[in-house]
Length: 75
Image (cartoon, rainbow, N blue to C red; front, side, top):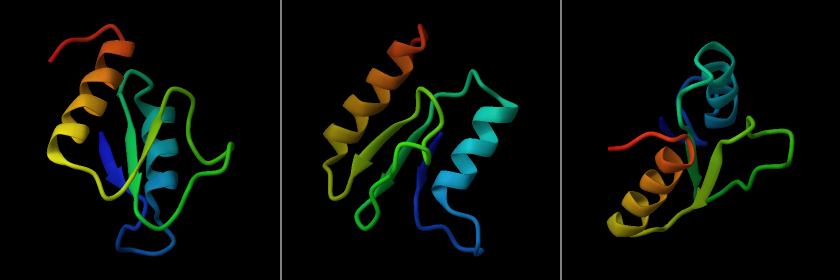
């Protein structure tokens, strides 16, 4: 799952969405992105990754592959 921190529908954020998904589906690989906010230690679920915007398409693909690979999965 890739989610931006800034989501429509206050108080939902990418951080709260990531925690909910991780709790319900722990096998899901999670990447949170933002150009505005940086996560604190307690905002990201275990094994989730954060990437700061702006980034290139290539950087996003590499990060996605890295996260999926770390979970022992393949694209």
